[in-house]
Length: 199
Image (cartoon, rainbow, N blue to C red; front, side, top):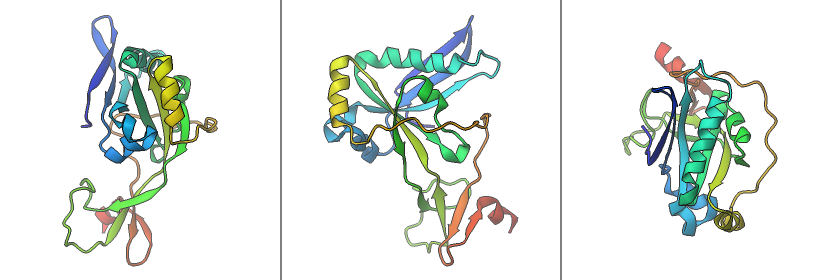
């Protein structure tokens, strides 16, 4: 579960049919990287958004837009990512007027076993595999008044770019997981976690 500082719900009659949550990113470097150290405390991540499948197609966008309006008095800098590994490109963020600020670099992390986080590792263990982290589309939104938005824009460390061309996105279902790829340290060969399960 991510860090959650602000949570908003979408209700149909008395039933909760959607949620949108924001919290401090896990990486302090990320908060400093957006607009510099002076504004790091204002950086939050839109870390979860979900609506039931049977709602109108624009329900998720309306929920996100409403949530961002509620945050404006706090003058926050919101960052969110669309994961290429899950076939996401940021359609939702484009529809709600986020700024597109390029893609993150693909990288590798320590592989500590299927289902384990890369931060939890034995420092003395010999690395056999590296977990490949897919590139993500980076989106930023200034939930703030005009004065703060102008100030944040003047310190933004990323170049604002045209929205990427959208391809047909794969519909996401709760519980879906991307195929996780590993790099064999000794040979450079690329395998999947499923290959380890089958071996």
